[in-house]
Length: 391
Image 1 (cartoon, rainbow, N blue to C red):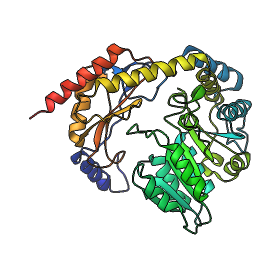
Image 2 (cartoon, one colour):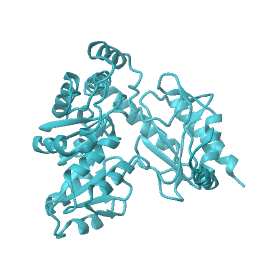
Image 3 (tube, rainbow, N blue to C red):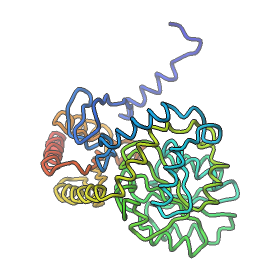
Image 4 (cartoon, one colour):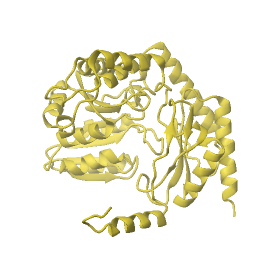
């Protein structure tokens, strides 16, 4: 098959990625998501998903999905502002607002779309966004698209953050941070950050993607556990919640601003009602006694796994359900990830540009359904992979 354009530039760029050990392929995954996974022909313990509360294959949530499809059909057919604002979407948003203790909430199709939509709706060329250097790519892209002035502070450096927010002369200043950082597992000092924002009249946005369902009363998030009410909170429904989508929660006027200005909400087809129904069922479960039990099991696994890893070089002890083991070199990270998979443990290699160059790692994510034997096996297999790297 002939083409009208020269494909050489693309093949050259792909060769460059391979040479730098930054070429990516999608793992071939099959079966129900749980503590074990079928990936690239191997059955392995799953330490790479974000299914923290082990809800993605919960029978009640699957049933809610099926009933939602039967009642509302397979697709929403239009954007929320045209014909896609169904009953299930409104029920989900009302529940999230009550659950988060805010006046209102708005549902998005994905976390990426939520962050881009929020940042571009709240700020413009007259404004300043102050952002942690390790914030997620969706936050970085939202900052770029907002046309605001963006000031990046060193990771968790609150002194530098305060220097940036005070007396800057902008119309509006917005500080944005993750509550639990996705690649390092660090938990943000939200009480201190909130106090700085209040002291200098800055707005605070908190990305609760990896804290939603995991921390706080009824799984409301790390901000709730810290006793902080940000101006706007974002969270995802595809991690601990086990389904798909995202939300923003805050004051009613601010949610109306999103409805009127967030292009990633306005110009995309609404999430399928069945997905929305399953997310609502999952959130109800998360806020129940069963949710408390699952959070307790995850916390116990977090403490145990971090304790077991103490002797492992490169272990970053953030005492979090996200546990990175730094190996530095991308090629080494790939080799170790393959060795772990061959040993029955799926721990994906994370490389640049997801993390800064020279900080490639294996990222282990914990689930409430992991057993102590699972955790011990993961550490044993990791030690074997490390031993194979010794000169």
